Amino acid sequence: MITIISILFIAGYIAIAMEHPLKVNKAATALITGVLCWTVFALFAKDTHTPAHLVSEYLGEVAGILFFLLGAMTIVELIDAHDGFEVITSRIRTTSKRKLVWILGILTFFLSAVLDNLTTTIVIISLLRVLIPDKKDRLLFAGLTIIAANAGGAWSPIGDVTTTMLWIGGQITASSIILQTILPSIVCFLVPAFIISRQVSGKAERVPDETSETDITSTPKERKLVFWVGLGSLLFVPVFKTVTHLPPYMGVLLGLGVMWVVTELIHHEKDEAEKGVLSVNHALRKIDTPSILFFLGILLAIAALQATGVLGSLALSLDRSVGNISLVTIIIGLLSSVVDNVPLVAAAQGMYSLDQYPTGHFFWEFLAYCAGTGGSCLIIGSAAGVAAMGLEKIEFFWYLRKIGWLAFLGYIAGAAVFLLQHQLKG
Image 1 (cartoon, one colour):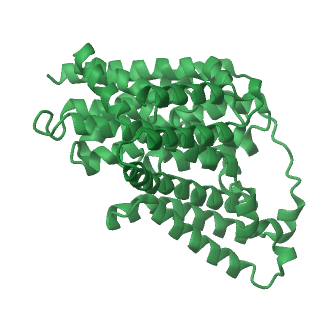
Image 2 (spheres, one colour):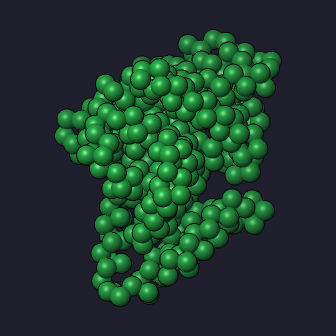
């Protein structure tokens, strides 16, 4: 059973990577892979009720991510429909591509620590469409956005789901994770950013705004109001989670509800035709539904690997064959670019106890860094990467050739800084 499921997952993974040559949408492949993995589990399981119970349990976690993505994408789409991002883009005066690398990279890095890497990627990709109209250049910036978002989320207890897992699980504290991983995360971002800044040159010619629909129906006051309410809704998510301990998607859905009410009140005197692109109904139709279905399929497939014990066995075999805990952690980080980092970190939490590695031990902090940034090496290795892949239609092999090796260099450089930092502190 495990062999069949593993073969199905690998075959599905290859088909996703070969999306463009095969001319089959990755969402379709992911859905088939996810369902087939669970089907094999159900057919071979001794207790027929166990797979059904487990898939319902995992679906709760998967649905949380999907609802979060749905809410965040709709909020961003509403802001964009009202031309709200002009509040930021109008303040970025430079058109120098090299300067934009640093401005947008630093903005992404720190915004990711406050929001999270997924939401930040969605927001920044929306900004890139205004600032970098040329598709070829914009893809490089999108690749940097993935790296910066993941690096920025790794040093914050609320910036990445795996860091949050370790924080809630008691393996790390908020102050220790910030102090121990901020420098490695900065290096992880700086190395690729410097190389990309040398690859681009000239000026980015912004496309004149021709969205007459928005110009007619949305006033500057409305744009600013929608932008700040939308941004406030996204910034409120980590606060809501910290106070209530409810999943992040609950905060996003609350924010979406508030945005819905605000936009309805703003345009209440207009009829449906006048509202046009400014309505929530239009935003919901415009969001990238295939990307959400891709998330569903790939996360279901990974859940099947976790439910059948494949990931746990992989972690145990790594521990036995490698031995060195630092090297094991680096390998786990690289594996997170192939398999979702959430079940890998969950497996590590179950494999190593707090008695063995107490709260604040360097292993947990190093795991937070590696699991948070290692996924940047492949486009489908992180939520930020998958979101950017869907929004900008980035090809798997293009990312591997142009961005993957840069992410790997940054990842290794940051890991080296972390270990050196640990050695110097004794």
